[in-house]
Length: 212
Image (cartoon, rainbow, N blue to C red; front, top):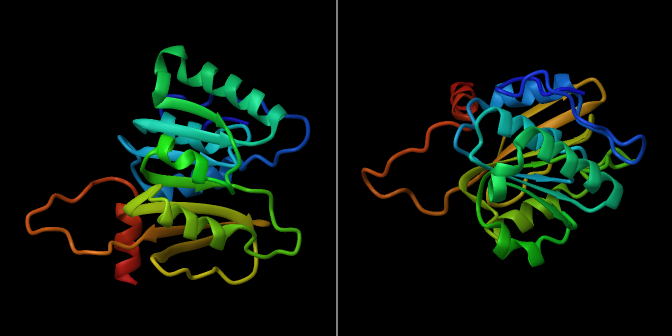
């Protein structure tokens, strides 16, 4: 398993022998290609496992990445991967937290606000949406995703994509037996006149969406 692009391109990751299902290289490459530039972004990687999604963002220039993983064995390997690829000098800019991605309330104040949240939980055995609606509600309520920010969720292919108040579904793509969904958190109030637009994440995706 390797980083697909950026200054860490080709670097390998340690993967537990069991208990995790890492996002495959091809799927990660498709996802980040659609997102566009993540340079300077604040990124949260939930259900982090090996840390592959967050490390991909780090390799592509994210300013801060935080990984959240509950399982002790996976967390140990996650920390090894982050230390090896981000370096000890990264400090709080590359932060690993052992915690439950479905119980974010205790972590919210410490985590702060992010431009992009990535989630690759265990697939729902029934092929459903799993924790997606719960996560969308919690990320908005706890303000873990800034208004206008993005959320990516990986799940098993098939089934409808949930539509949740306060979010817009921008992209729904399947690759093999997997599928990723890209949501944008809606802005509650229009920006003040003359306010600058943040460049980068999913700008190309938004343009494709509006051109359709």
